[in-house]
Image (cartoon, rainbow, N blue to C red; front, side):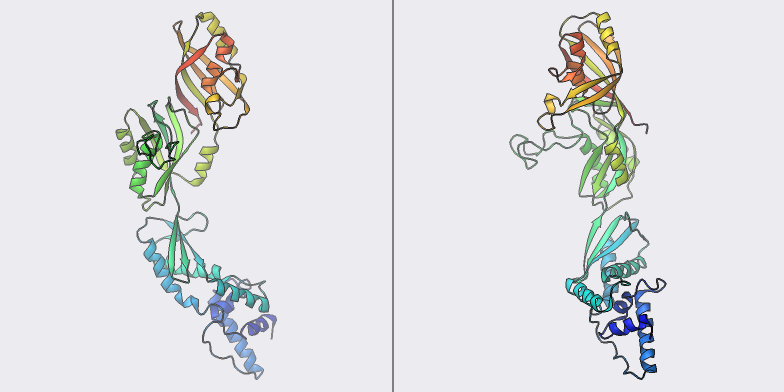
Amino acid sequence: MNELAARAEKALSQDLCDHCLGRLFARVDTGLSNSERGESLRMAVALERALQDKEPLPPHSKCAVCEDLFDMVPRFAEAVVEKLQPLEFETFLVGTRIDPIIVEREERLWGVVGQDKAETIKAEMNQEIGKAVQSRIPHEVEFTTPDVVALVDTRFCHVELDISPLFVYGRYRKFSREIPQTRWPCNRCRGKGCSKCGGTGKMYQTSVQEHIGGPLQREAQGKDHFFHGMGREDIDARMLGNGRPFVLEVREPVRRQIDLLAIENEVNEVGRGVVEVTGLRFSTREEVRRVKLASPDKEYRVRIRLESKVNKEQLDEVVQSLKRIRITQQTPTRVSHRRADLAREREIKDLVLEEFDGASATLRVRTESGTYVKEFVHGDSGRTVPSLAGKLGIPCTVECLDVIEIADQS
């Protein structure tokens, strides 16, 4: 008797089903299913015993490892199909929870027979239910990024779904100086609702996120939405020009085939004069990472008030001196309560004086990502060096700020 048959005979000292027998040797021959392999090994052992005039193997009654759990695969598959029925999806994957007692029995059998060629019962159950489900629905199994994972608890035939989020990429422009980019929970009640926020749980009644995410969540029938922007502008700054890239994430969507052009039109109609979106398209989690990690140059238009008299020649000279220089910025006073107090170097890549009327001026500034433009103008009590105010030797106040380009080349 060869080694394989001898190990199989040793395993069959217990009453095993073909699945549990074949799974012990899953890495020997990948051309067969575990059930087919187990049946073949059982026949080989029976033939060897007959040739050696040994007692025949007793007929199979109940598997000593899985208790014939694989007979339940059709029922598990039907439960998965029923659970998936309301969803729109293209790809799926099946996972399982196996009774720990069964897993322990399997591990004890490995101690007797060896596990060097074995596959786990969990892996086989995943495969068998997955194949049975795929034969019943017109969707494909996907192992890396499935739209939905069906998790079967084999003890109770209970199915839970892990639904992948829906991601939508676009660019937004913000014309209001009174709304934030994302939802801003009330800093007193933390979103629960109180007298300060009028029971809304929010510091601001709407945001760019809600203008875009509300319609997307509604159409996708999702549970919630999250906003991933390529940076953010201050609440009182407008986002103009080519718009800011973002990815909107809808959690647990029921529908995935939604009309993004209709959503775009709705957002732009309802948000007229406040928020506008362009180029909505379906996206991925990988693009979320790219958007969040991107650090493109940005261009701003800033209107400033000069608190003392200055002539145009003096202003021109200072503007020219601040082109293509590196500045050092200590964490601004206005955000120091929520950010570490660090000194950062940033480059002013271009600075152009567009308008000047003696008391005020308009500048166009192109900067490295992460530059605090307001502080570059007024100096933040010496925390930004050099600054426009510092170079002019007079106080300067930012009246309004607009982002006019995100230079991400997309």
